[in-house]
Image (cartoon, rainbow, N blue to C red):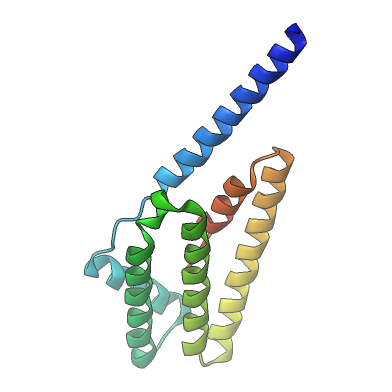
Length: 151
């Protein structure tokens, strides 16, 4: 009987810490809409990174505005429906990457984009292996993957 109580207590403690870790991660990622200055700053950074011309820079600004708008639209789901929020956040990220890829039109830009994506995949894979080794819950792993993002 004593072993059963210890096992139940141990399971309860583990579940509590997993829930705490997941809620801490969600709270740490609370979305606050970017100001126009922040959107311009992100655009300038990506313009410099990819050596964009004026037309591409204008398109990058529109991509960053759209990303901010989309994140604003799904922000409420973060607490009301975390699973749906994660799915939509993944879609926003992938859509942003696809939009950025479409405006890149020379070999150097495309190569840099591919290298960035490769680096992200490697970083995500390393983090996933680390979290699997720690026996983290699937939701925590998914949140960690979404937190590793560029652009």
